[in-house]
Amino acid sequence: MHDTFDYWVDPNAEMTEELRGALDDAADSMLDSKKLAGVEAAYWTRMGSKEFLRWSMAYDEDAVINGIARLHAKRESAIDGAKFLGAFRSCGIVIPVWELVRGSEAEDIEKAVADFWPGLKAAIENTEPLDSNERRARAGIISRQVTLR
Image (cartoon, rainbow, N blue to C red; front, top):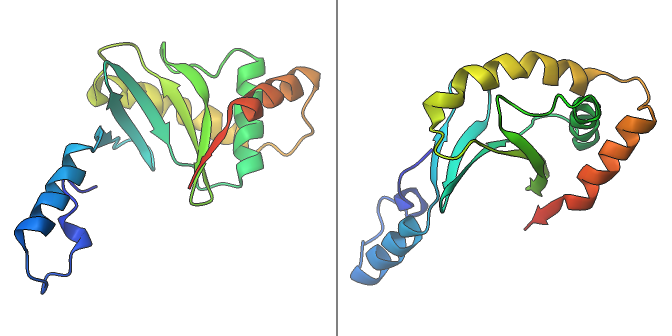
């Protein structure tokens, strides 16, 4: 994670006033985000007055969606009051998103997310066919999914 976009610029390049301004403008548009320590590739993010958990999954997209659908069908997709919203794709990676309890900070969700991970991982790695409730949950998740390019 970087706090600025300075890493975009070759260290040997001249830092002109125009370039500095463009980098500062880009940095001003960054969302407040923090990587969670207890699990891989999970990020607390504040967007306006709401907080979210965005969790990049290094698994096949269908396996992730099926796993979340399995939990969602059993009403177990929430994380300590955080509601599962859906998922988006970016650069070929599926990123499930939960809306956190308003005012939550990254430190507030660390333990709950780490505790949630074993059940989610087991659901993702489950290769049994989905039952009718799980298929219905999966269809709902897919209908809300977006792709960022």
